[in-house]
Length: 146
Image 1: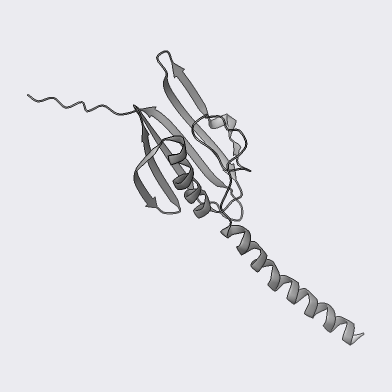
Image 2: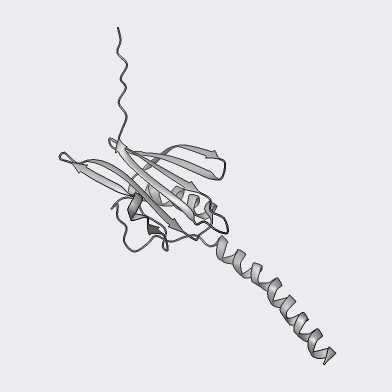
């Protein structure tokens, strides 16, 4: 009986020790884009879902877009940031600035006359990783030469 208890404890210890190794391999794998995404030229990682209650979009005649979409998912924070660094240039967006704050990274892209700001916020055990995508017309210089 004592031998069976020891064997059980040993097997559980080995199984528990192997789980983080399996997870770290999955965390290192690059994320892939979902097969379809709400904004045609802004991919989202597979497995992320739009938070419809807090997402809005509007297209004004003349193809001016105002988009504020939020998504949540279980992938780790840094692979999501890397996903956008890698995927957005393929959609003709140019990275112009990256800012890192407390548990968040903001990537600023431009394309044509539009700005796209992608903010990725780290989740924890109880909250998912969040992505916020905002597209607005590029800010125009309001100063004049007087």
